[in-house]
Amino acid sequence: MALHTISVEQALAALPAFPTLRGRMVQLRPPRTDDADALFRVFSQPEVTRYWSRPPMRARVEADGLLAEMHDAFAARSMLNWLIVQRGNEKAIGTCTLFHFQSRNRCAEIGYALMPECWGHGLASEAVALALAWGFDRLGLQRIEACTDPRNERSRRLLERLGFRSEGLMLGRLALGDAMRETEVFALATRPGDRS
Image (tube, rainbow, N blue to C red; front, top):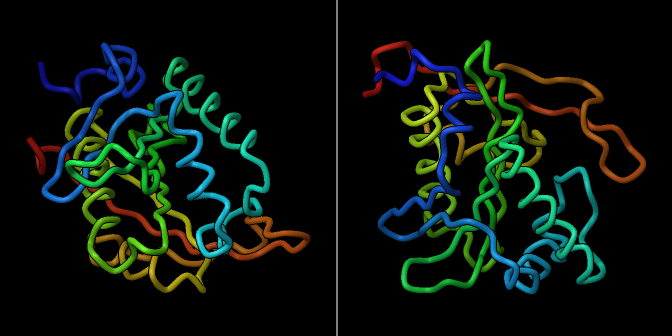
């Protein structure tokens, strides 16, 4: 049965388990209870959260909370928050997330974070490409959006390399500390029949 004949919610509900995606350099795997230390290591770094809507984590208990949110979101099929690991190593070096599913419009949003020492090696690009392909092919999505701070040049370049196009700025959309910042919206769309 072609996936576009069922809704995004139906495709998510039909998942028997959290999917694992494998690439040449990275693997996207489900979060596990023993991942809290690695998640804290990722999200306690100011370089990682510089353009995020939340400050760096200060206590490990915050990572425990994030793990619980990831598990709850998958149970509700409202978000798929993969952990990025390098092939041959199970230690998480980042996250890649599909969320804000809109079944009627067949679209979702993608987000990602990676340890700074892993930047510049193509790991984030491969992780995001794996999640994109899975979202288009398995969920039947027709559009995936990404929102980034326009000052985040690394993220902008990653999205452009993957075929995303900027659709402009949304003013005052993102809270960074006490200030409201603009967000640049990127989108990647596919027409029915473009992917099998």
